[in-house]
Image (cartoon, rainbow, N blue to C red; front, side, top):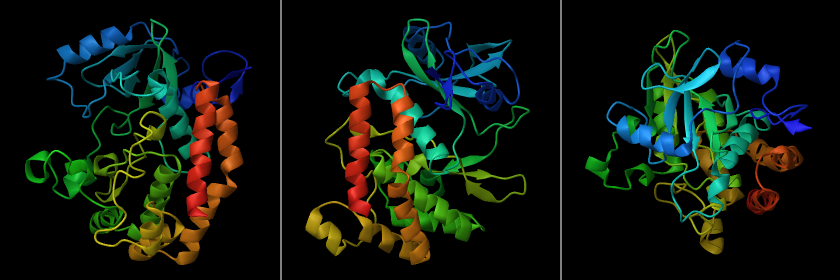
Length: 324
């Protein structure tokens, strides 16, 4: 048996299940899992088209479009983003980055109900893996859906907040940003809280302010975008801080002062400052421990190497101890 390269569900052949293809392609019947270009060609293409591409971030990623059953490079009207193995030789398990991001997004969507875009792990012409994700900022006709990240919404930039502007904030502040722009705050705050717990449990040490965004609906109001850039960064940078952002503007809890890391009391205080019910916050925290067996099943079906799978699960188990 094989694992579907999108959902990780068991299938009888390498590639995608029919349901996964329909979700990735809006009902079309063909999607290749082997692409016709190499990582070197991706890097060259990105460098040549850098002035025309609008994709932010330091990782090599390009836009693709699906045409006649083939995924082709695109400077405009792209409906997918492709991320090959990053060119950062200092990272541990460098070749595992695409499979890591694919697995982590699958866990967020399938196990914890966090809204995520369809994604897949594909193979480049040189045999290397690459992460493919469907763009959620485009309508069916190709027009752009207005999107602003939390740096833009809080008027943060390198010019006015320095080089680390993406990290110059707190989880507490993300709640204030959400409240300021979203009439449905009381519903959306539970989603935001769950995402913060997820990033902590799955060692995503790069969940900075630019990795949270709002999308404008057809009615003109704003909602949280699907989650993106979900990655167990601790696999690749084991000495990084546990969180990209501090929890609070100006508070250090007794738990953090005693232990040197955040835990359940910090999350409960964060939920209180969000205006959430303590019972709901506690239920969300408990849910992560209850669903650990489901996570382990997806990890076992993932495209990570066996030793990296073990480390992935061990990291999750260690973080779960802190929020129990």
